[in-house]
Image 1 (cartoon, rainbow, N blue to C red):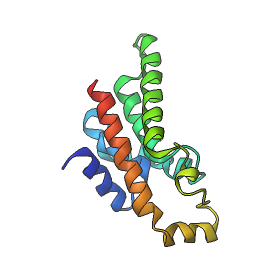
Image 2: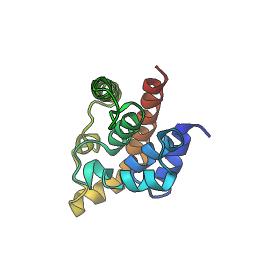
Image 3: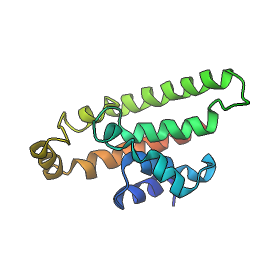
Image 4: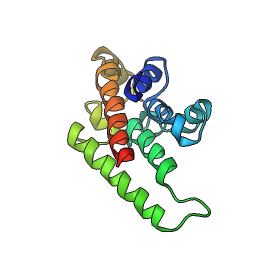
Length: 147
């Protein structure tokens, strides 16, 4: 099973987009699967269902931070490197999907509004759109990590 399939498996089993993407990289991130799921939980739905930055993108950004980020004993250059990789992620995701904003990616529907959440479900956007965003975020992250 490749990383995209692994992420989609989490997503299809009731984990949010951020959890699904980050956990697909758990094996090389230094976190356990359970830790990855817990850390990324609050980022789903664009930060606690507020529909800001897409959770698939934030999960990918966390994976990049775990790989390239500046820790206590690291040089300052690692911070800039992580920022550069994050900008690359956002740029590539936007080229593919038009935005990194959860609400825009869900046709400007508000998932905290019951009527609009019903429309999201009727239009099957979590299954069609969000599954694509999860797969895209994983593929972009894999390319960035491989460079």
